[in-house]
Image (cartoon, rainbow, N blue to C red; front, side, top):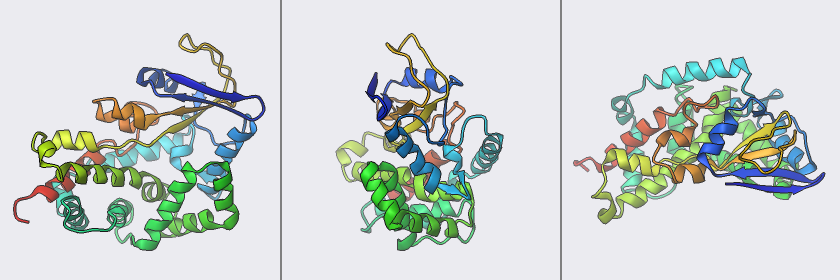
Length: 296
């Protein structure tokens, strides 16, 4: 289904929660990912939020760059190749995975966030240091991305989001993929672990599931992915033309929740495919195995 909110000069956003329609639009070169502010006022505010803050020396993080950015594509492919070499056996030997296993089975309290941030940070920097400060900084960034225009503006004017992003840049040595992983992507893994903990705490449910089905049920997609319209677009499935500057929000979490395909959470097979589309399920499997091993 496509739902449109349009007020001339103020906002023009189309929300889509139909998997087939998302695939059609994402394959159309007129629909892209570009944070250069354009379109109605509120559209510009949303894009400017990412362009001005979630960038390194004016260059947006890879997840916000357009489809024809060859540097982004090459770096993503190289990262995916490297992540695909990390097997479940390697992951289960990670002390942070062991700690997350304890958290999932309810053996420790608090948040799993710092351990998740440590694991994904060390994919890029062997001595990546995650702690309460870096985790809170990641929460600030996540909140900023979800905030409405007023709350987002307050966060920026107060300097809170700038300080948080600066800390995460420092921890990641300005590696764009590391920054994205430790301030944006990590929250989807964290939410998956919250789901896994709930499943394991309910023997009536978990006893009917194996590791593969539990990982599949726990996978969490980003809430939404934004696309911008470059050229006037008319599709048979739309009752109206889509104008340049229109924002299209793919409701990925809703689509993934209603699909048995794990790749839906990562846009697997598309130009915007997440390089961790195979790595994250392996990581979740390793954590599940650590949580359910018999010698605890």
